[in-house]
Length: 362
Image (cartoon, rainbow, N blue to C red; front, side):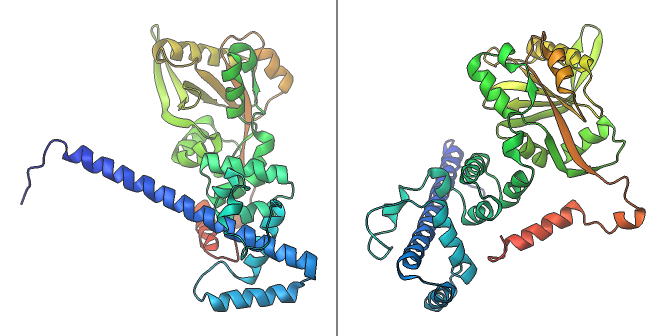
């Protein structure tokens, strides 16, 4: 039986759903913060006992057994994870008044841990502790993971591809073409090189093949581009005079509040690429840019580039343009019998997901 609903019913339901989702997110964050604070305090308590009373590995093993017997069915208190808690405290050895967790509520210690620490899931911290020895780098990746909403698999990829060395490394003319606040943010929004390890391409890859692969894996591509990029379209049509032109890829950057034109090149950078991009940006600004938008940016992704040639090519260009390299996997040289034996990207992702469910194998 159909019910006649009042006009304001549907917006009311949608508003309630939004409130429920917001409450769920807040609850999940609160639970995560409480768990991390508990783990930090357990690590602190064990460290203090080891320093004062000389507890060894056998005592810690017995401690893990006792906790698991006291809380059957509750995960997170294995021997390996107990040692991780100690390492977690060692990574953030905050000194406070009082002693172990039985003497003060755990929440009193939470204020001493940075927000990027408390907002990151436990197994992300395990990855940071296992992969990075430098505390400054751990903090950098923790902040980036929170800002980007990275999964653990993405965090592993970003560490393995050394994102901290690539971010802001593209060659640009932003300092001359943009005002200081936007030029700095725009520069940090680009990287060099871009790593498209989710693609498998032939050695003589054509630009359309690269473009099609990036669009087919647009979520992974957006993750590699970084926070703020929104996909607008592929082969976006522009008519200038009596001629038709097509942009390889068009994005809009939500933080910079501008269009970003990306041109893909399967060859090394050539000076004429900058002139073509300058033309495209003029057309986009004239035909698509809203009055409230910032000037459009151009990004030329090449298979290689000579820094001096790029700097000369951009020296007198008025539109903001950045040039960076891209990298991916190449399998053309593999024997045919080996190609079939290689796992696909999908198989690897499924294997990683299965591994990620295990407490002992983050």
